[in-house]
Image (cartoon, rainbow, N blue to C red):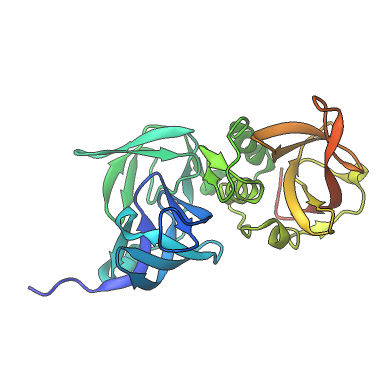
Length: 267
């Protein structure tokens, strides 16, 4: 019997997979792929795939053993995900295995309990986010963003076990149905410039510049002149027209460049 013909699409089948600059586990971490997220396979090298991430176009190398490659017959079931895990870490169960998945993982064809992934059927008894009920919700964004507080900083990270500034913003907006680019520079082109920090409101994105004037940091504006951002860990700090002020160190840590409003957000 002939083997089923494979498609060029792969889906992450572990908690979180590393996207590397080179086909080597010691190579620089470009980004991460969460459970259930898709990639397009560009080329192969031994047990590595060079891929493009479906949600943001980032290119890198992944370990092929951590992905399920869709058969062409699977493509009729491939669709945009509208349900995500809202648990920090929780088990996705089948009759034979349990897969620990993290906050923001994709759950396809989820009815609140049953989940149908391309590589099997599972049950998930944790909390979920459904875009059918909460798409573009600023209230949901607030709840999700705070779940990451104390999550450690990890350059290239996008998971609850380690995240960088732009990865944090990208994933929390993903979970309310708003697609964000991967880097601070690209994210700073989203939305509308509001002009002054005094006009900022919850959900606005504040961008910060280096000494050379390059965008190097981003955070989510909160109420009461505070901001959630990644600095050693996901944390809440003060913000004013100059930048982010660290009360413990009694100094500014980031210089404000611009604040932008994401118009898709609603109450």
